[in-house]
Amino acid sequence: MADFAASTAPADVVRRQYLASAAGDLAALRATLAPDVEWTEMAGFPLAGAYRTLDGVTSNVMEKLGQDWDGWAAHDDTYVVDGENVVVLARYTAVNKATGKPVDMCAWRTTSSYGADSSCASSSSPTRPSSGRP
Image (cartoon, rainbow, N blue to C red; front, side, top):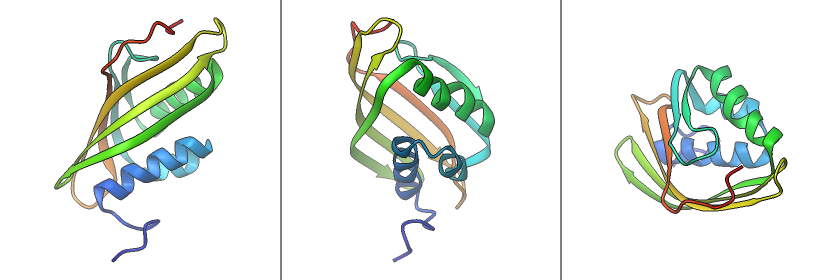
């Protein structure tokens, strides 16, 4: 069995993304992403839109979440793996800094990786709209 930190198994790569995000470790997060990453935050989710490149994802999604939200946390509860495809069922919680309104939503996230590299595409979609959107 491969060491978790070096594993190229898609579920391990995605799990390291969640751990890096939770730790605020953008360098570790970048290490899990392919250079041509395509990351989509779905409509209804904070920062909805499409982001490309390592810097595009970290600057426009991860850093922005930290700037706009207190206590942003992703609770990655369930992983469903089919080859190189990973679906994560998760709950996201935070409080908007500008409005003080909380967000607490369930979402699914799909990640596809191609070859033994890291993830190339990611998308999140809320399954329960939150009244806490700014």
